[in-house]
Length: 253
Image (cartoon, rainbow, N blue to C red; front, side, top):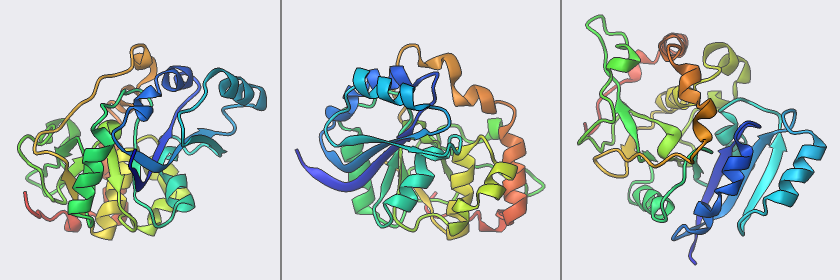
């Protein structure tokens, strides 16, 4: 199997980790293999006995490993990979989906064709109100049908997978104090803000967004239920703090 120079990076929580690990066979079925595949787990969430139990019960696919680090919430799935695999593109995945065999190969091919952009399978299109401020999140162009980009107005949603090239995000992405104050539970918002600061546009793999099936039983604690009603407040906070409105320019749709 071809090994490609990307890092696959994902995190999980105690309530879902067993389901995730039990269904991780989707990684072994990919048509290409990443250079590294790391599952980042919050060290304070998984005591030593629990770690040993998981290792014994759930053997990992070849090339995958678990690394325990301080929990950063949903941003855990990307921030450590950016630090520890500096120079390699990082692909983030969610722990509640089963990805099809073509998933990683098509995402990588999209990146190789346009390495200066962030690439994703699923995105919304940001809308502004008459006042020049962000329209409510629920009023955006949901799934951005027919829009591939690249565009600063495309807002990647990490659930279907996102590829971040080296240097795609501002160094402010590691400002944990600001992250926890402005955007504690919305990783997609935090990473989009950091892409805007860096001037990096987003592009979809296909003109139509793709959504992949959830692992049965994983819906018990989905992040969108936590963020429902809170996205607008976190968007307003981070856009105001970093003065991002002036950076929303249309590039290719």
